[in-house]
Image (cartoon, rainbow, N blue to C red; front, side, top):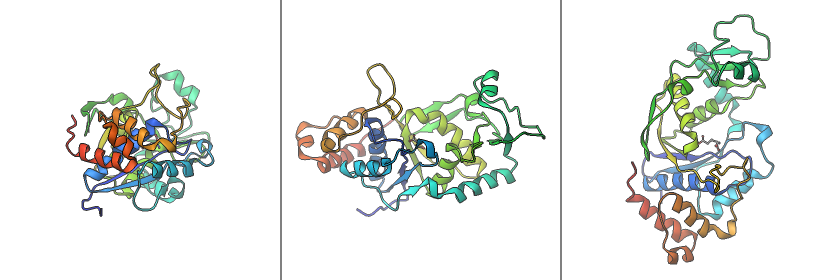
Length: 285
Ligand code: GLU
């Protein structure tokens, strides 16, 4: 079906390994949101941090999405191709007096407390290498989430002068993500609940770049029995593409949808079709 609305969503995995159940929940939730809005669902590969890139992960992520019927629209966006965009965003912040250089090391910052205290804000003689920090005009106290409703966020944490360009010259996640979400015309960000705080930090960046933040929806996390989050760092098992209909069924159970057994047996397309119908009538909040 052709998109008929202005909804644009995205799935933005980092290519640090294959997809696991946690990433499938996020991908599926985002896909369903785009489908019920008759919108577009895009794929962005967050490959700005070369040391974290695992060879073959981009191909593995794409083939897993395809095996699960989660077909994205438009060309795949690679963050590694967007340096000029990030540079422009940084320039815009700089023109507005919203960045400054920082020479602090991690140890120095840690010694002073959990958050960066603005130590270099008014310094003039700095020793390289420097990072570039966002001169944060004020923390975000709450965000409106399309599943969770109003979520309070810690204004001290979200008000930190976080790094936008690292000492090694790489653009930081918040800046790259916001610059891309703006350029891609994203109208709703669907991501895991572990990213609630980053979302609130990013809302300040959207505003600093004179853009209204998009809508957002944070989805439940998949955890191991001991409560640890499913992640590549925690060695969450990779999805088995041969069991795609079962994987989708498990992912849907995290989204509070129980797929009838006969639908699971009918295959991936039937499960997705069933899920889109159910998602239509689902009321969050
Ligand atoms: N690429 C990051 C991740 O996989 C961020 C995703 C996002 O911005 O939603 O966690």
